[in-house]
Image 1: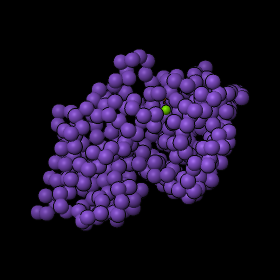
Image 2: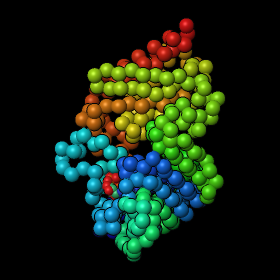
Image 3: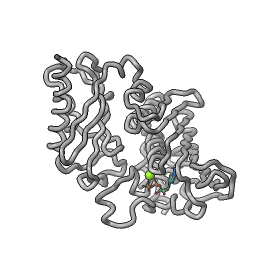
Length: 322
Ligand code: ADP
Ligand code: MG
C-alpha cells in the first residue's frame, strides 16, 4: 500500500507547484473567497495553504486522506459532469505519501481539528481552536522519494513554477482574493473583487492591463469571455496566454492556436499576445478524467469552440482599427 501510494503520488505530485495547485483547487472547491499561499525553499522545505472555506469535519479527516475517496462525486454519472476542480480523490493522499502534512481545519469558527499525516500514515489527531476554514502545511516534500528530488529543476525554476500556477489560477478566479508569499515576502496579492482587469493589473502590472480589451462571445454550447492584448502589446513567448475552462486552468494547443488566429496577420512573427480566456461550457461536453493532473481535457466540439474564439478576438481587433 505504501509503495503503490508513492507510485500514484508521482503522477499527481510531480513538483512543489503540483502541491500548490492541488491545495488551492481544494480551497476553491470548498467555497473559499480568501486563499493564502506561502512557501519556503522553492516549496521543498514548506508550503502552507490557508483558506476560509467549509472546513472538514473531524470524523471525515481520515477519508479525506484516503486515496480515491472524494466527497465531490458519488456515482458514475457524476463523472460525466464534473463541476468541481477535484474529483479523483488523490491529492491529499498523494501529498501525504511523500511529505509531512499538518492540517488545521474547522467547520465553525470555534473549534476544529489538528492532525499530522506523514509518509502515508496518520501520526496524530486532536481537537484544536481554529477559525472556519482549512490550513494545510506540507513539509519536507519528497523526503522519502529521493529520485523525485533529483528530477526537479533548480530552486529558482521550481519557485517560478509555483508563482506561475498561482498567477493562472488567480486569473481564472477574480472573485477570490489570493495572496502568495515566499517566506512571508509578498509576491502576489489580488483583491478578489471580481474585476478581471484589476486582477490582471495585480499580476502583470497596470501598463499591461491597460492595453487589454474585453472579449465576449457565445453560442449555444460555449460562452467565451476574457481580456486580450491589443496587437501592439506582445510577448516573446506563449506564457502570457491563459485558458480557463469552467474555472480550471487547462493546456490546449488547438485553443492557443485559435487565439493567435484571432489576430489574423496583426501579430509579428514570433510575437504572442497576453490573453486570459474564460470559457464556460456544460460539464457534459468536457472529459476532465484524461490525466491525473487534470490540466489536459477532452472537449466535444473543440473545433466549434476554436472558431468562436477566433471570431471573438477578430471582431475586437477590427473595432480597434476603427
Ligand atoms: P478531491 O479534491 O479530488 O476530492 P482531494 O484528495 O484533493 O480529492 O481531497 C479529498 C477530500 O478532502 C475532498 O473531497 C474534500 O472533501 C476534502 N478537502 C480537501 N481539502 C479541503 C479544503 N481545503 N476544505 C474543505 N475540504 C477539503
Ligand atoms: Mg482535490
